[in-house]
Length: 302
Image (cartoon, rainbow, N blue to C red; front, top):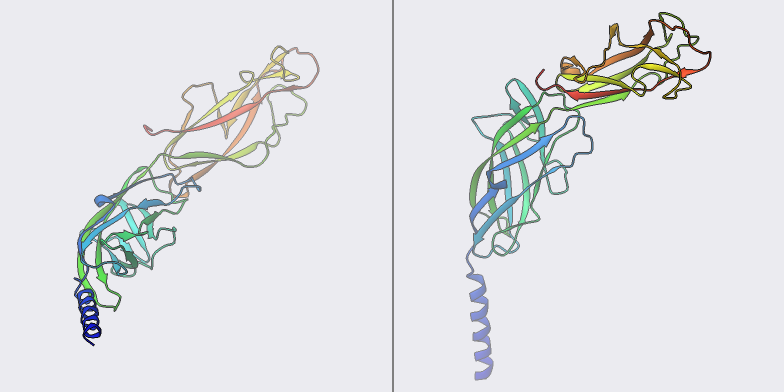
């Protein structure tokens, strides 16, 4: 009987020791070391979400607990409304969202600028698989610059019984650099047919293309045969000089290209390309041709 009693006492002491473990207390909590950096190209549809690292540590028994994460706008820059975070550069706005580690957007940042997430804690209070992502939708037509906002993250420990423990709060900022971005897309046609060449002749049907830009830009035209139609398109054949035209503007060879202003909120501008043959001269009968290439570049200084 004594042996039986001693066994009962020992078991009771072991159970009592487990129940006395200290509750989890967060001792540190940070979002991306205080600042999230990213770059953004409005015309890059393949851009991946930016990973936002969360880090924390704690004391006590944290294993199995969760942390409730609340994100809200800093009162000094209250730009989070209607499910988005509005990053500002002067009067311009770039819209972003924060998502979970899979890239799925967190619950809406409703009026007042709050979003909630629930994340698991490890034994030492570390957030497990708790990275967030910064989501930037492609196609936002904003000029180059640094777009920013400040937010506050509050992490509150929740134990297995639903009780709330300590909360830690940390401010962080988001800074996104929008780069000068340009692109070209074909429009109508890829061939200028001049028919039977004659003085002053041009193609009945010009070709068009669209320039995409979030800044001023330059268009540069080059040709395989220095803006001359050559017999059978060969380098050493007979030549007929021509003048390329963008809209009604003659284009002269220029290494810098032709400047155009920022297309503004539309983000694009249509251009029409044709050619004019000033003088045919005495050349053998036959087929004549050339290839024109259009290049676009950002004109940041412009």
